[in-house]
Length: 230
Image 1 (cartoon, rainbow, N blue to C red):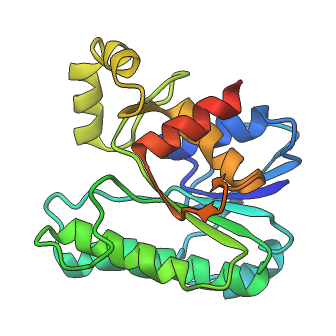
Image 2: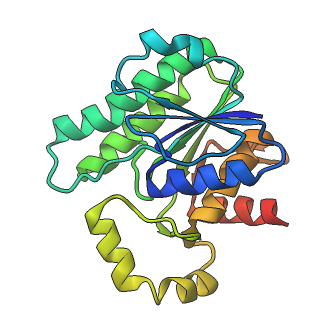
């Protein structure tokens, strides 16, 4: 499986990259972002691209991928709705629309957030915008689109968030998170579980007998990720 990874320097993206590099069924991982991760691995190829709204000049490097893990996310705190929409909806769709045209056989995994509103009517700005983004992605002609809605995620393996407010949160709650994850495994996830769940749905799908679920909440992600680790 060849995987394209957006947001590899963020907390969730770092976890996804680590699991991709460890996975026997992943042949190639190509990261794309404004900065490189600085990591080196025989499977890893890094593409530094400054304009994440326009891929015209690099389309030749975006073909023949089986899966895309889109882990770019920005905080809505202190951000106007127009700017949050640009950095969430517009940026995501710019990449996804290009990839759907170039890789119609691709499975696209989008990391959203717990509380996103697919009805697009929430009074909470970020929930509306995330829900609108989820809906737009599911209309694109990919092989499959999965929306991940994690809540609390414990960073493992030395991974750290780039967002200041999140770093403070993890600094303050760090001693409690391992306990909470043991007590509430379907609520408190880890970067490891999320990364493994991404690989699982890309490789096998999130299927139950007679069912297809595109939107996966924290409990779904936990069950898929834990089953993949067995």
